[in-house]
Length: 402
Image (cartoon, rainbow, N blue to C red; front, side, top):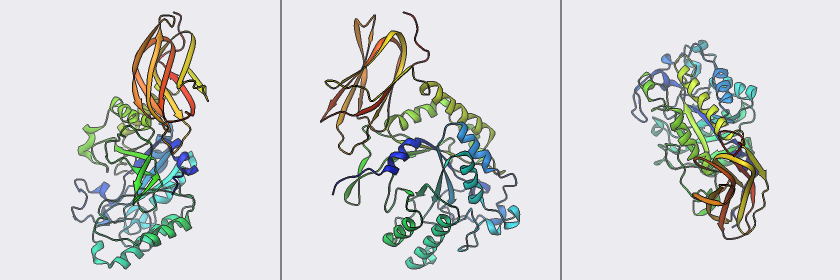
């Protein structure tokens, strides 16, 4: 069976950077951890200043293109007024039980042009009280609410944690999801379009060809790297000292987006229903740093000429360089193996070798300390014809006189 790349998977890779929002009943009960079985009464949920536009406007300014909201976590609390559980916003003090976090989130995403993603934990505390068939019915009923009542949803994020002991009716589940939202992307489970990078640190290994085995067959599934801006997924006062620095976030970006994967950075809205001010400042600083380093390349060439497995970017004058970005026409054949980077200095008389990467894919960002040079050279080791659709050279400053 041949491997195919879906157009929506290519579009997903173009999203590059998204933000995860862990928000729910656990936001109001600090100290709880997954599967601790501690009670968290619905009366505790009351985000009196909830403002999803505050969330989405912030990430839009930071350069994110998509978002994922926790609609139901392992605790079972529904952030929408689900008909299939009493453990939801409809029985909380917030807006006298008439609020809907999911609705406000979706409307904010649409207002600011952010792709809409829903997280749903298939497993939850207490599910053992139902038969497998009853639990599948409950699960499908809730997913159907989410995929019916809020318009087009771009991304459905399934968390596999806790599902190890339950055998789901996968065929029935996927048939329902695909019938309600034919264009939706599914993360991680059952009929996945995207895959988890196997860690929660935000790092993608190299090489990353985005082809991996799933249930005995090879599939094209772009990696997504999820991580937290603070220590915990949900907001906690104790986590205030753990806010990641811009440098740490940039390292994560280079090991995810810079290796052809997507980055999904978690921020936990606080008990007011707002993003913590420090987190707002930090994620915008992070976005600005991405733009500063890579947003205005000093030279970009589309469909560059690759001759004898060599690509050159030549400048008329000396240029200060510190990054080379490559984008490959996506393929399932894994043509490019090694990529070697060099620059020519001193009026192109001397070549300095910078280093090697493995593979290219959607995007490869190769960074190095500032160097003043006239030419950047990329050499490929490949198993066939090379198809680079774009090369960019970045630097701190524009062309400078030698």
